[in-house]
Image 1 (cartoon, rainbow, N blue to C red):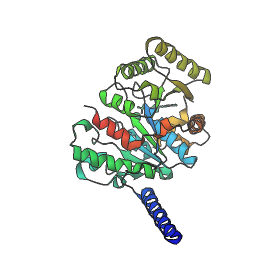
Image 2 (image 1 turned 135 degrees about the horizontal axis):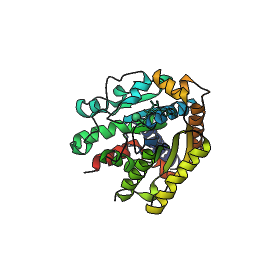
Image 3 (image 1 turned 90 degrees about the vertical axis):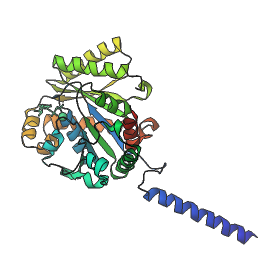
Image 4 (image 1 turned 180 degrees about the horizontal axis):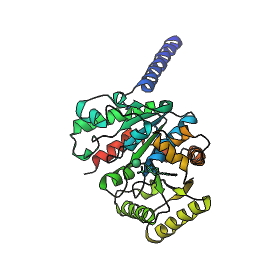
Length: 306
Ligand SMILES: Nc1ncnc2c1ncn2[C@@H]1O[C@H](COP(=O)(O)OP(=O)(O)O)[C@@H](O)[C@H]1O
Ligand SMILES: [Mg+2]
């Protein structure tokens, strides 16, 4: 009797182990226990403020810290991540959506094995896709949680619905702003559009500001303070200061070389600034709030916006 009981227990244990194992190796994205990639969405109110440089250099710095990183280029207007990568991808997310390609086939390998996915036109008008296509897309992007520890999304600039949709669905937003008056007002307009959107979950948002192209740390902090003052006066928008990236000729040179400054000039001031920001981000505790959704949920939410 006891023996039989033990055998039954053994079998139950075995079964549990098999399920556990299959959950770990399951790439269909249905596994609830799996750890999601951490997602940073880089955005700005205005173009040309250093968004793509932020995305690509943070990606390099995360990689240097041992993280597996994928960049998703969701800036459909100007595909400048690929220019800075010096590699033109053959495929894009559009090929997953419309040609049924596997997500792993549309990842281009960049420097330091950083993965790069071009959004292409695949996510344009994603809300018009058939349920079948949406399911296929989500099942595929969910695989990225297995392939990356960190996913950096480079969004387009401005307050188009598409950008706002991305931001609402995002877990951690990095807002890049510069001292140019138009950059500050456009950052404010973006925050206002986010604030006014009924789907924005204020209490779950993590919005951090990077001040770029500044002449000193002081100027960078003052710039954040300016934005914070006007924002807290008129909007209910939780935000915090993340860091400063100086105006740096080395960064400009690196762009000309089609390579991230973090690789081109490891000791440049801007490189050190990106390293500090990456360090700071990884030191922020991984709360349940940040980890609970993942890239599949993010894309699913975007496709659900009518
Ligand atoms: N910290 C910086 N120092 C010097 N130039 C910069 C800096 N950040 C951005 N730039 C310049 O601005 C240009 C636009 O940057 P980019 O990252 O492509 O902006 P965005 O993606 O916001 O349009 C770069 O090509 C570079 O010449
Ligand atoms: Mg850009």
